[in-house]
Image (cartoon, rainbow over all chains, first blue to last red; front, side):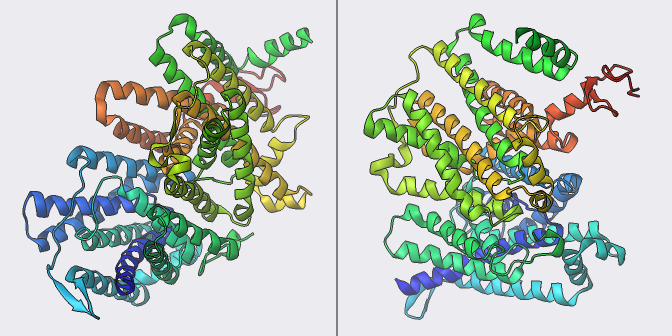
Length: 289
Length: 346
């Protein structure tokens, strides 16, 4: 029981980390809260479902189409919608909520309100540590670690990564130094939605898909991001595993399953009451009071 | 007294088209049952009026003071559930349960202030988002008390007659909106809260440096927002005859925000216009296009935000009114000179 919970914590935690990272990235760079982030995730999962289940394509090309399609969708949404209202924080928020609702309704129209699932990329189980674990779980953990390493290298070694970090630090100075802030933001948005698509590809076989699942996932991801500190990548990853652990502890302790979310949110409230900036929050000089 | 009222009507209301529209709107609302007593149409109006209270209370709390609350459904839900529980366990009637439900929501508002006051910006928004969801879990976890996912049903209606119900809700709505409008009126000579709320939103440090106890006014904003949202919640429960967990969902919180920002934030007429455009429109669309109504609503919200980011009501007001550059008095847009000081408006 406890071992299974640990495996579940690792799997869910790595998926949450992947999703939270995207949200945290776009907040840190553009100070934008993208409420549609998990909606991109759900849309990606449904695209994968459409290609593998309804058209019967192979896994590799379906995954490629999903990731590329979602990145293009993210770029379009950024260019056509978010970029135009970037100056009004509330408008960004609302437009992304409306967008998520629109995605949800489109999925309802396209796929109905049934529960869906996707075949795992690799079937079968292995015995790890004395318990039987589906291979897909190990694939998820391995893939997330790989993506995180690639992302870290991208942010620290490449020129684009450095310009992203510069814009996150101070967009005005970055602009003065000759960094194209608008382009950097677009690239960040593409990366964030790409991460959401990768998370969807990994998790679609082990989670059950239904159109309004973006709301619950969004709550969890927001909790993770706030817990770790908005805009902090380290914080997002650690927060993701804390939240996944809290979920599993509540689940195996035998308290009502309805209270899982309550305890998760309570964990966030406690952290915020003690540290108002989250665990590793970045606080810039002019934003502090 | 009467003469002063008449005079302020003649010089304060008639020359400003926005105020004339607001007055005509309320008069028309009071005359609706003379035209139709169709139960469905009246129900749409009743729900619109309840949601007007809800949306305006969000605007007072979040628009005016800038404490952007993502979990306004908390107060709505507490109002609804408190009313229902008071009926279920004590057998009290709507006249007592709705005000007490609102008081409970106020208390909850003041309690949630405690962690919320330390935070600002997105942290505050996301913290407040969590409270109704926590309560949602608790409601589901104790089905013997709260009815679980089915809610507490069978609570009494305000009145058997739909028309009486309509007038009760309408009068409560009018009084609530008037009180909230007065409380947030920055130009008032007697009530300072409006000016102070504006000051807190624009620059809290400066407000504190001017000797305003900003903490006290933020708590007050939470209490006002909680109280009126609680009234709306209690009315909603008694009209629907059920207090259901749907009152506590994220959708409910965001609906209020959508209405307010659609109509125009930091204005009392904005949320009123927002609710009265979107809610009947949604009901109307449901009967015509069926399942596409939510999609159309989302697209309309996106388009409005793209082309009128300040909100529809504010956009219309700017088209039909113009502020005098010298004395800051509102004028009809087609006047060439200010009606009071004669300064040129072009």
